[in-house]
Amino acid sequence: MSSDQSKTIQAIELFCPGTIANISCGFDVLGCCLDSVGDRMWIRKTSEPGLRISKITGADLPLDPAMNVAGAAIEALLAALDAAPVFGFELEIEKNIKPGSGIGSSAASAAGAVFGVNKLLGEPFTATELVQFAAEGERLACGSPIADNVTPALLGGFTLVQSEEPLRVYRLPVISGLWATVIHPQIEIKTSESRAILPQKIALKDAIRQWANVGTLVHALHLNDHELFGLSLKDHIVEPHRSKLIPLFDEVRDAALDLGALGCGISGSGPSIFTFSKSMEIAEKVKSKFEEIYSETSIPFQVYTSRINEEGIKILNQES
Amino acid sequence: MSSDQSKTIQAIELFCPGTIANISCGFDVLGCCLDSVGDRMWIRKTSEPGLRISKITGADLPLDPAMNVAGAAIEALLAALDAAPVFGFELEIEKNIKPGSGIGSSAASAAGAVFGVNKLLGEPFTATELVQFAAEGERLACGSPIADNVTPALLGGFTLVQSEEPLRVYRLPVISGLWATVIHPQIEIKTSESRAILPQKIALKDAIRQWANVGTLVHALHLNDHELFGLSLKDHIVEPHRSKLIPLFDEVRDAALDLGALGCGISGSGPSIFTFSKSMEIAEKVKSKFEEIYSETSIPFQVYTSRINEEGIKILNQES
Image 1 (cartoon, each protein chain N blue to C red):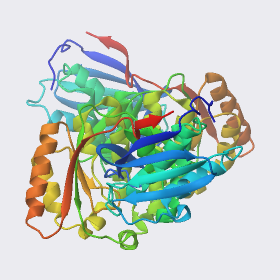
Image 2: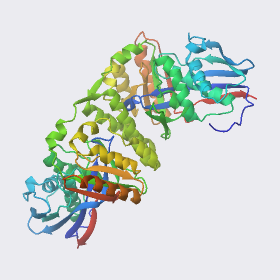
Image 3: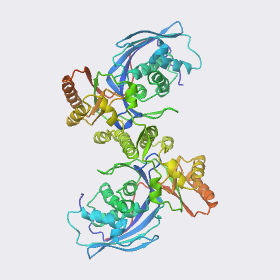
Image 4: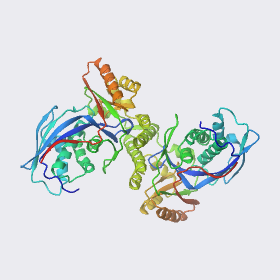
């Protein structure tokens, strides 16, 4: 725990960013943080101890803190304090990231909640320490304390989860000028289906290609090498299975690569599809092409372009 | 091909270093170059075209160039030239790296041969371009053009093989002050046995741990972070199987880690065992302990300590 410097903050308004997990070769370990898609969250101190979620707009989610990922994450944080605070917290969330979209909706809530409460407590924990509490929110949503979305939400940029138990997470360098284009086809893929489709065992030769690409991706980030980064964005393990659940995945990927995108893959467990481009211009062209392709279907969709968010969660307002 | 600047070299004497391939998590993709163990090689121009291997000491290896990895590698290089040279080459090798040791004996010959011939030809190829020819030497020895030993021999330092076809290899940064201790127990492990013991399929969850560690290792090299490097030196896939073929592997590994080594694993396909340490003092203590452990067996062995060789193959002498 670090020193207490901002106990005077009474209320805080946050931007809680969406995140891309997996990033092709980095299934379950790599992630990155988006800049232009995210929730808003307001947290204020209350005189009465305890946690109350007063309002959630944009999604039908439980207000009961014990049933809500933000509540579960805050509870995990509070349980790790030396002493319970004499005040309480009231939370309001505007969900802009749709649950089930594959761009870290529950992670944004869990990460934002612990980031904000930590600020109101005078920052007893570092951003890296907060990951474990946010991961407890993910446990409520996914059944296990997965960290590949909450880590980029809290640390910003690109991140690597080496292990969850013990929790070892690292911030990686960000390639300059990188833009993401994300399309969210609004179909429901059940988590159970998305998991069941994955093989329990994989060919050793495919695994070798995958870890060669993970090594190359980390190397490319350190070198700020766009071409090498693009060469590493391959997934020989998960994408061949999960892409079958996403309509027009192959068309979308091929179109993005034709337009000069560095790579394209499934965001999280889908159905969102991400691409990376080395300029806003290419990212916007990819966006238009995605809109064109999906407009010919009856599937509702949203498309975002975004810089990589190096900061993670952002403070929009605070009251002392 | 690069420009021709040193066609005046008539003869060259080389140090052809041993190498550690795999490096725990990086099976088939990572490697590093040693400094104090290696072969010597002499190559001189002859007026008669063609290649002649005049002498090999230290190991019983074929002098017929078509049957020798150095010969096969040189043939691959010559075949890639625009025009055959009007002169020939005579080769002599002093093998100090025992064949079958697991520290890149055939790779040292293949890499040294193409490095030297390239020099005598006026450097038509870059070091990275030479990797493909040296890998053809490995094809003769192993049946496929594996690059994980020839790459560190040619590029020096730590290296990553992203793919063999097309060949994509990268030089990674070296952690400062790093020392290796390598013990070679002189037992024969048949390549066929060493391969057959590996599973064709592996658990996805183990593969995820492995690529998380590869990402962490590359990150640690870029950060020059010894502790993080040590945390990444785990092998959940290959070591559990192959270590059974190496007498006292567990004792040796546990002793090394107790003495402060950063990590310990199987070099190549064994039987050599490597450790990394952050100082010469620890590397020497580990060496003494290995000698102590193996002295209680009837197995002959050799132990080396070495800095990481950042240069790769070294020119010991050259005649104009």
